[in-house]
Image 1 (cartoon, rainbow, N blue to C red):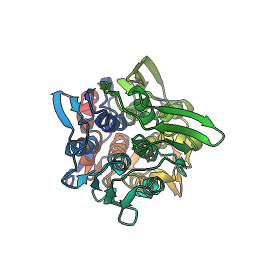
Image 2: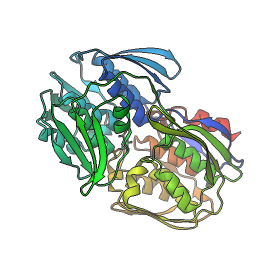
Image 3: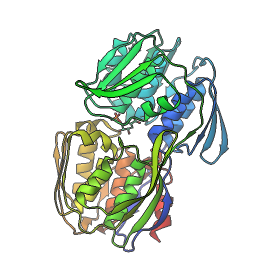
Image 4: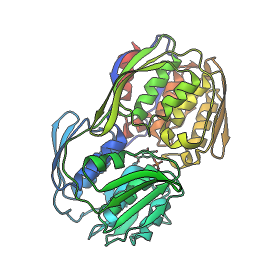
Length: 436
Ligand code: S3P
């Protein structure tokens, strides 16, 4: 993807944002629909599939493993999975997508063929020890570049493990479940705080032998070798993408927007708990369950009286991807917001703590970097702006800076904004629809 020279300007938004919008498909669930779908050995229809570059990377990889994809309509695909994967002829390119690389490593480690997973410059810097270590305990054979991509995986028969993960990461958990599903015996994954549980929900839906719960050691997921039942999957809108629009509506005077069909899985709704603490006006209009995931419509209004708060502990995995846009909200709130226990933000598409602090400081926000988070002294004034900010190959930074630009006295220039295509290519067209 050539994302260079795609700078855009973001500037003060004088009119309220108004309208009803649909947010594109959940990225995490889209990846999983392809990967678990590929393991069903049958035909499934996936509706509202993500058009983001990350999910397209996973789609290309499962095609190289022998899955057929028919495009039925906009956002609707049919996946026909083979009984046995084909041996990939080429390197499997995960591009910018950590989810593709970490989840597929688990699945590929338990196959009877070898494969290589590679990534772009940003992904090649991200830590893979977190998956290589537990997979190696299961007997996986993986060569890496000092625990970084590319990963050369020599497929083999694995043994089950009981693993206590030092980090609460859905990517690590899903990787181990994808190895465990093809391994005799019971594989058990423990984490201290519950990370997003889309894999567990989808595995339950596709009738895997899976059990989840909590005991003295933490949250556990147990999986046995299972055959998955092919079933159609409808994917909700991504709350992590909706978050940008929710915050823009909360900080731009006179705004009122309705976002339809957002995934409301409680392991992803930490941002709504923060809205409650800070005083953002929002309400649910409708809630239902679709393909074993909670979904609903949310109305968000301009919220002039927001207050800073502390964000730490168990909530962090439930809003990890929303912290950059929450920082923008906090900068417009009265008082201090402290974000702690979020050290893993440094291992995302960019070092999101230092990149965010650098960008927001440049446009006049009072934000201080901490080893595991940041502290913001917010106020209701517009930010100074008038600067160029860097996106560091990171889609969520690009969209957070865009949102901050709406409250800047002088317009800001966002470098390489096209990284937004990683998860949300429709971002600007949806913004234009509600900004008049
Ligand atoms: C994801 C899990 C999170 C999140 C990422 C997507 C997933 O990462 O930040 O954007 O789909 O499993 P970690 O599990 O590493 O925290």
